[in-house]
Length: 287
Image (spheres, rainbow, N blue to C red):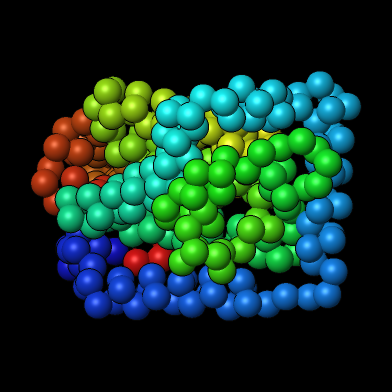
């Protein structure tokens, strides 16, 4: 790989190109949201009941207890509603903007993993629709977002067209955990990483207490986030040399028939040209 290509990777991507990429993702969201089929709502409620029964069978159905605990606490309920509606969006796009401005190479990888997370989730929502607990009759959940008419979610009129049959996997947990994983991979300070971890835990409690997700939805979102970050991480390319066998390289033979002494690896790596080549051996995904 040439040093020129490496320099291109280190440059900040064109904002016009990035805007086009994000608009394509938004268009894909609206297309997937517009696609509907007869009986989808009924299937979503059936799937939701099945997940609820599954959790009850293994004694992890904690959502109703959390919901009943939150509902009478007016101030905390409002805070939880806005945490549900806004923080996962602000944190995710805040990290993307920061990476775009400060770490362009990492931004490309982060953007790829984030888009993959969303595309796979949108496909899952269509193939396996799941209604949130608040939309399943007779389970006893209270929709706190609607109760307080939370601005920025379906509690407000402008968000009424949002696909609400999209509980599995939980994108709230997916996005929150994605932020935490990206912060960890960029070697951010311990305080920043701790805040990211707390954000994931708070989001987990909030999405269940507001009756928007089951615990299994959160598990699905977490697994998907980990998988998307893993498949888009940098890959080191091992380059072999002529005359190598089994990963070892024989030193060359001089004109006298004796083998020359290879330079010490540590010293060789200190050479600026070799160091540059070594740095270029990291391959990133879509850029």
